Length: 165
Image (tube, rainbow, N blue to C red):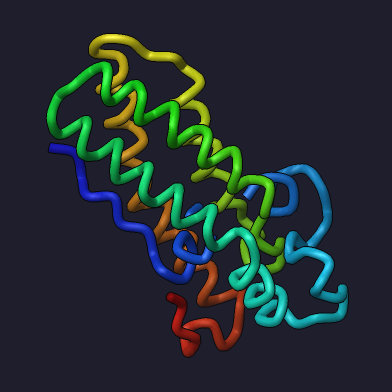
């Protein structure tokens, strides 16, 4: 059975979950916090603005789709797993429109999460390939999530005292 998808509330429930243009190693130099955050805003302010914005619902949708991959994969159902991968890829693509502030994720873990999910979805696996692609995504998520959560506690002072939800 694949590992349980488990994304931190501070990241994906806010929008993990887990990122394209403005985060870390990706293209672009915007903060990703949206127009409400000024360039002089602290990283915590930028993160909170992002966390309370449209990325929140998109992140919750992605988490639900990742859990769908897990359930389909655990049932060893190839066609259901392939469909779940496609839905997760679409959810990751939607979430990529709301990148995490660059100051919060300078190493690009958020982008790595979304790219991994989109790559699995775009591989268009069939048969056993769907189960293998799902296993790779599910296997890598906890490690990337931990890296991002650790990075956020270092780059966003005061975030560990904030409760997301």
